[in-house]
Structures are given as structure tokens and as C-alpha cells.
Image 1 (tube, rainbow, N blue to C red):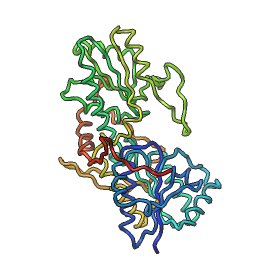
Image 2: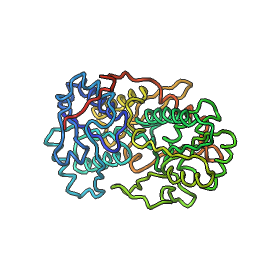
Image 3: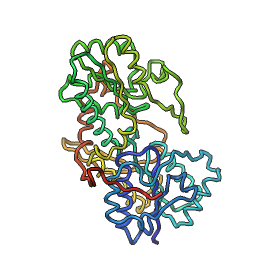
Image 4: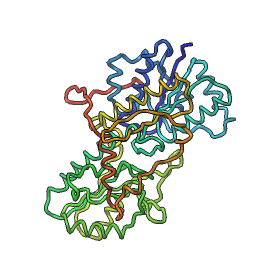
Length: 407
């Protein structure tokens, strides 16, 4: 019997989260004999609980859907809402009543660690109440920290943005003959994947950024001084990349050296400002021009510097989610699996959402140089295929065209 499907987006936006939504919609429309209406949650599970959703199959023309594929952000709007651990919570029967009233046969949730927690809990409650609804997670995070999957849609574009932007910062920093230090702060609370991508900016082994520090290696201000002194002896303009989550050997975040960090609704510390703190230390120690740059949200959600490989894989993840649900899968997350061999090939697969939710895949320690301030070539081989390709871009009056939802 034909069933309706619904998709939601959760967590931070990326350059390709809408490409995954595009994949869900396109695959759903191609299964007209099995799929009825394709709905979208407005502001994720939180908005859906308040009755906010839209009919995607009716609202978006083929031209709209193609534009959606290349639109950064989160077209449906997002949320950071954690469902209760207790299956006796009244929120679960309320959710399932809403889904039943809309004749939903499958729910697709596009997001990261916490979003997979939502998929796992909904699937678990569905088993308890003998629901036939399928719940499938579609991975999304620039942090590339979801376990099981080789990489995550969103990371390739973030890596490309970081490498491209840092390469331009290096050019800017090198124009004067006077010694200078530029600190670039990049996203990464516990996992250094985004910051590691800055190594791709190098044109040769000893090029800037000379020093790269990830959360996976204990950070020492004294060691930083020694590293900087050595680097300044080799180049007058030094560029350093640091993860927002670098911490000392005691586990204290460097950003907390100035003041205690606040926490978000999930209890995660909100980390910003470590580069600004280090800027002060380096100015006092070396007496040269020092400036800090925080790329902030630009690195996660740039449509102008995005990877075609990333976009196509995100769309394929959405398509594969629908195919899997129609074949009876539930409580699963789509994975991207790299095939062995000299050429890059990826095939989608599935893993239990329980194996992913509330877990983090950190940057491999063997890909960090022994001195703790560099990235080994193995990472470059891993990352380069993910940043390949330039997507087609529609522009008007010299500016990019994106798809906007009427609020």
C-alpha cells in the first residue's frame, strides 16, 4: 500500500545538507507506485511537534529541486532538540499519533551525532508499539566525526573551503617583509578533521600553514613558543591553524584560559576565542605583529566554495535512505564506504543508528606528526578525493541564486 514519507533536518547547516534532502525527494518521486506525498518537517522534530511541516512534492518544481541541490544552509530549517531517554515520555505517543494521522511510512532525519540519537530513539519506540514506520538517518556534519562511515557529507565542502581560504590568508600574510604571525581558528570541539584540512592549502611541504594544532594532541603554550621560534627562523610570515577545541594536558580548553566557556542545550561547551587568547601570548613573547582570524560559520556553509563530489554523495545518501526504507530497513544510518584501490570509489551502506549516536570519531593519531604540530601525507591522500569538482552555479546580477523557503 502506498505510504507518505517525511524528512527533517537537524543540527548545524552545511553546504550539502539540502543535497541530501534533494536526494530523498527525487527518489521518493521516482517511486510513485510506493510513495505518496513527500513532507518536510519545518525546524526538525521540534517544529514537527508544534505542527509545522510542508508538502515538498507539491511545493517544489523540478527547477526548484535542482536549485535546492546546490543551496547551502538548511532549507527546511533546523533544530537542536534532544528526545527524552525515557520511552514512557508522553512526547513519543504524541509524535507517533501525528505520523499515523499523516499516513507516514518512513521518516528520514538528516543530521549528525545527536540527530542519530533521535533516529535510534524513534526506532526503539516504534518497536515497542509495533509501528511499521521506518526511521532512517542520513549523515550530515562538517566535523567528519561520525563513526562507521568513511566520511560524512558536508566534510568535503568544509575541507575545500578551509584549504582554499587558508591558501588566500597565506598570500595576504606574505606581502610584507616584517615578521608576522597569523592565527586561524577553525571548527572542531573534540575532533580535528576540519583543522587538518588546512594542510591542503600548502603548495609544498614547508609552506604555510607551518603549524597545525588539533584537539587530539595535548597543547602546551610553552611548546607553541618553541615551535614558533623555530618557524620564524625559517620564514618571516608565519601562519598557524588551531582547532577551537585545543586543550592542555589536564584537559582544560585553551579558550577557558580567559573565562569559562558557556554550554549549549546538549551540554557541549561553546568554544570560541582560543586564537584570540594565543594572539596575546604571542605578542607578549615575540614582540611582532600578530593577528587572529576566526572563520566561524563560513567554513560550514559556503555554497561558493563547495565540492561537487560532496554534493553528489550527499544526494546519493538521500536516495539510498529512501531505497533502504522501502526495502524494510529501520533504525539505520546511511554510510559512505570507500572501496580499496588506487582510484576513489564510494558505495553507500547501512549501520545501526545506535552504533553512531552520541559517539565521536576523532582524527587518527597516526596521521599527526610526532611533534604534534603537523599532519602526515596519509591524510592528504584520504581528503583530496573529497574536495574534487566544481558544481554548476546559477547567478543573477553577479550573485548566487539559492532556493529560499517562504516562512
